[in-house]
Image 1 (cartoon, rainbow, N blue to C red):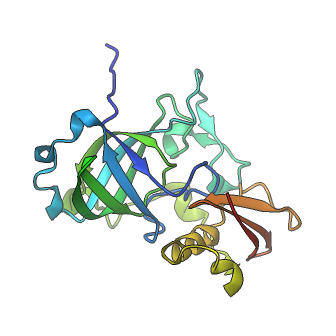
Image 2 (cartoon, rainbow, N blue to C red; image 1 turned 45 degrees about the vertical axis):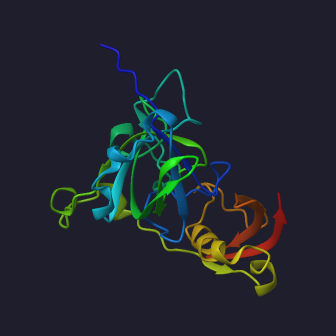
Length: 227
């Protein structure tokens, strides 16, 4: 039986493209996003009681990574992009079904005159306009496993980068976006196999192109260009 998923909502984030998006949800709480429901699902009754939960799960689609074929192995960024693991042992977007799972903090629910109930969340790892298929409450006693093992993720830990961001360049960004972009850069948005200290990278974020270089463990912001 073929299962057809309905898009119930779309998320609005500061990432118009994939590069720079955190590799996991919840890593950067300063990243704010808004979930806007599709017209068919703008019934406040569907969210009754959700305001009493601090976090939610989102099931969503890798809309920019849809492929007709799949591979049983992938190269996780955590392993430097040069070692293969089984696709089902990773959270790679290149899967038989392009479905993602994220847990985010639910900041508040507001009723918008045009869009009905809107969810404001923190810590999302998704591109702007990503389709959402379902939302479920995060339940600590069932969803949290403090003694859980994380396989190769525990073995290959990474350190955050030191971010050098001059006051002048940082000041070009809206004040409410500054903490978030510093967090994004500290998590090193580069592919793990790229380590050229002279290469210039750019993260499109909140209407700006933030351009930088990385040498050893220091990321230096060079330009902030309005898009």
